[in-house]
Length: 521
Image (cartoon, rainbow, N blue to C red; front, top):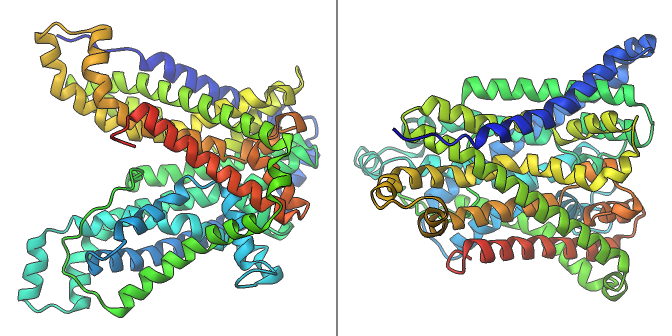
């Protein structure tokens, strides 16, 4: 009888402490507050009601627009069949996964701002700008999540529909909708959660108090209003909303896994190269490409030399890279230890326990990063200068936020490796370091490299937590870009944005190359 690895349990205990201790500090601060009158007034204030209602309203609209358009575009992709540049377009749709939110916001301002290609002027700032930015991020993601629904339909079904001379509506009703409705609720809930916890987009494009979400209100309460009590109430409300959405997702359907490999699949549907399908694909490509292209053109025409010669830029780049690499190392290490136990349990037939261990590592989905940051702020500020702890806190929170991606990237490979080669290793008496070097690492280095690359890129581009704790000495590239946008230094911001994007892509490529191997890269 094999001995189950217990490496997951210390990691899960550490995760529980990192999550529960700040949350306990939040609750304790709210309960111990002497200002009960202010707390009651805040709870019944119109401001709080407006923030909550706008948070839910913008997330709902963003989800409806993103998923509704994604269904049409994904169907066009699936029905159009093979065509030139198809794989390139699908890779382009995966790019928003690693583009920092504040970089995309600058590109959207370049396209839709007052002097942009499609000028919206003041109308850009507020709900319109938030919806445009969320559509930029979530439309490609939803397309990639929904495409497998069409690929799951057997080819024989399509041939039979042709023999029965079904029209487009009948094929949709009897073939496409039955498989699509299985994944649609999970995709909607995932995108709703992403929009509900959106920070950088709302902070830069919100345009005023009427377009404030809970995440931004928490930040403003701590950094501008210096009102910890209000931040606690807002953080607890945000936690309650996210927990409610996660509970609905758990009972309806588990969250869909994001295909972050960006590999293209070939369609088995009947080819239907209609002008409408071509127009939908072309319009989506233009919509996703325009902000990136506009930002690149602004950077080329901007003051490149003066920005690149700034020592502050390179200092911010060094801090961002340090945060990204350290967060990636911590996140992948925790994922590896958790999945060792999960794989052993699955191999021993305890599939429910294996799923429970892996799901415990993804519980961070329920806790928004700014809520955790607020908890650390409340916990540390009475005893130390919280801003001196900015970098460690940012690294830890980004490592926690990247853990679900690392678990999803590595989980299937580690389980397959255990199932296929455990008996062989036992029969050959290969264990310990030799098993890791000869058997496990050659098979797991590719998903490990991908997980590390993705977590590092996401951590380098994060604005949320560093905006709460950042100082001039701990400024990262996203925070520098946000300050440049706030000072209306558009030309300098464009150069900084392209520099940040190139840094993220370079680190992503290097980690895939060095960890995943040349063949994978």
